[in-house]
Image (tube, rainbow, N blue to C red; front, side, top):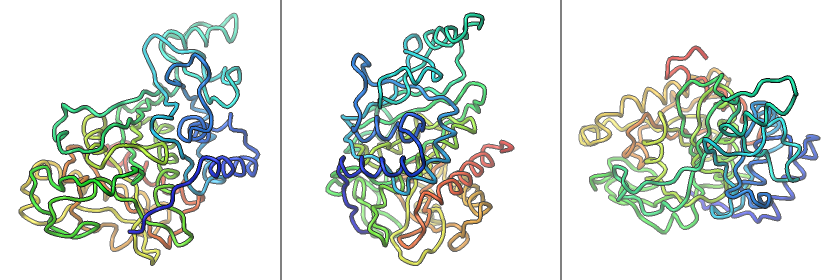
Length: 392
């Protein structure tokens, strides 16, 4: 795979401005763009006194984001380092204002936080005759970190970064958490090696790392599309679209990466999903150049691999999730490659203890514009719902 190019904050700021102006949107009206500008790229700082830059998002703003991103943003925003993020954090007793009062916040700071009792007080001040709610029907989120006590944690080499756990509106909640992992995007990940398997045994198939290897890159740099766009940018933009549709459908979402760089290797990402989510979907595009279609990396049918834990206890769920998701994507009109699956020994599924797939959403010749994101996201959400036994 070819290594992607880094973008500067100034270049991203210009591209975001053009995207917003082209759609007639302002940065204060679209959740995904607010999150990218204020939280991920470091282009806008949190207001003074805001601590960690905590924010809460209304359902309406997420809905606006899904359509606006598809029309306006063909590649992912984001250029800030992990330490520069203005991440959304929620506590049970503190916050600031409701999503309905977003316009009262500092310009460019994004939606302010609503959580616990404070959000109920904010809702109560909207109208003198309106009752105060103790359970605000809004999307909330919190920052989560890697835990060195987790099973297999000792095999991770890069784990100083954090992820964001979003909680769906209580009125929509399905009480399932989906980990959305935007592939690649860990600076320095190619120069660090981690064990391919928890027990140190060699890989049974080829791929980015050849069969027989016991170590692989902690995080590969990713390929470039035919037009030069880095894979990591596109997987991030798609991940944001998937996040938004999952939240609208009542799923909680663990977002592994929301900026161009997160210091979490593939093992750390997988262990976060294992411990904080009910399933794990990593988004990628293949390095081939034939517009081959969508597929997932299924579990190799090799006896030694199928008998290794945690693969032995979970591989059938991995493949069942993959088939449900690719079926959902096919129903949206996307072509599948070779029936929608390819056997591959991956670090991700070698360490996964929840249903987990690497989803290849096309390749270097595929359409990777924002116009494809709503359909891909809808197919993924449909597949997740089918997997968990929900009607839609």
